[in-house]
Amino acid sequence: MNTLDLLLQLDESKLRKPSKAVEMKRLSEVIGDKVIFRVEALTPEKMEEIQELAMDEQQENINIGELQRMTVIEGVKSPSLKSKELMDKFHVYTPKDLVTKFLLPGEILTLYNIIGELSGFDGGAVEEIKN
Image (cartoon, rainbow, N blue to C red; front, side, top):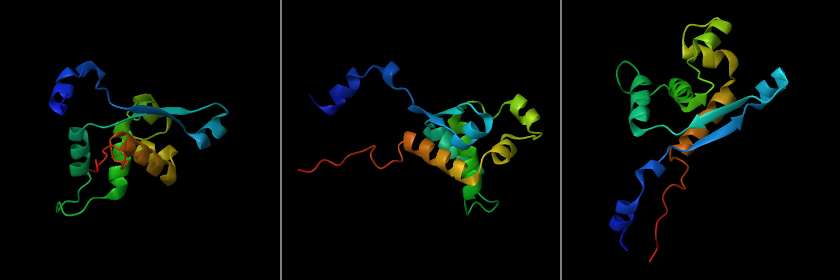
């Protein structure tokens, strides 16, 4: 059977975005209970939107920190980092402020990398066939 026939047989309902539960160890230690974030792959459209928003005013350079923070905000599905309750609790006005208020730079980078892997940037998403 050729690849087109295989794809035509694919049940579209099985095409879910990959997700993963990750423990935030430092926060777990501080709170005394497991703090679990559920992260999810981003769509190509959402990744493009984030990249555009992270560009400088001249549209020449990407602010890497901004890219990472926005990816984490969009990729962490639970708890919502857009939660008004969380922002009120930490006395901040935006999700970006919230992320930098209670996550360390290394935690942001780690979450960014996990979301990237789930989104197909792990190098193992496609395998070359050798003849």
